[in-house]
Amino acid sequence: MNYKSIILIILVIFITVVSTQNTHTVDFKVLAWDFSISLIFFLYFILFIGIFIGYTLPRIVKISRKRTKKKADTEKLPERKTS
Image 1 (cartoon, rainbow, N blue to C red):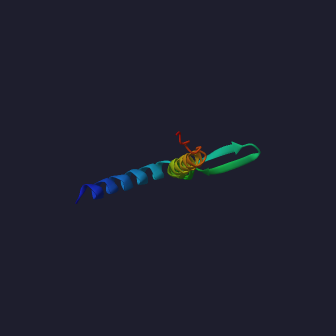
Image 2: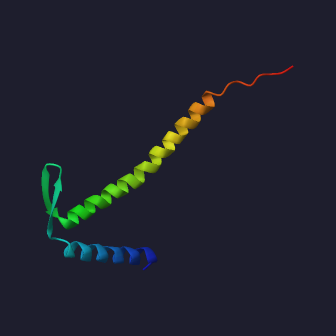
Image 3: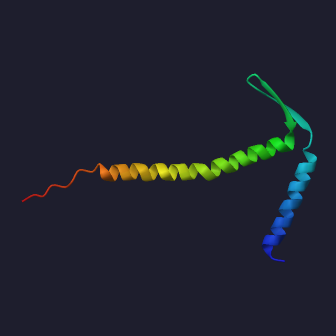
């Protein structure tokens, strides 16, 4: 077995233990809404939101920087030739 398989097995065992220990329901109040969901679903929801933001935010910043750099390059005044 290579190290990737061992890490995967440990990760699956860890996720299984955490999932079985956090099955009780929790109540959330957001503005006028009341939610009652399993804690593990809430934890996974927050995890996936974090992964999504962590994946997309650097790409948005990179695109924004490219646009501002491109805009700055096109707005440069042409150099004057002195004789």
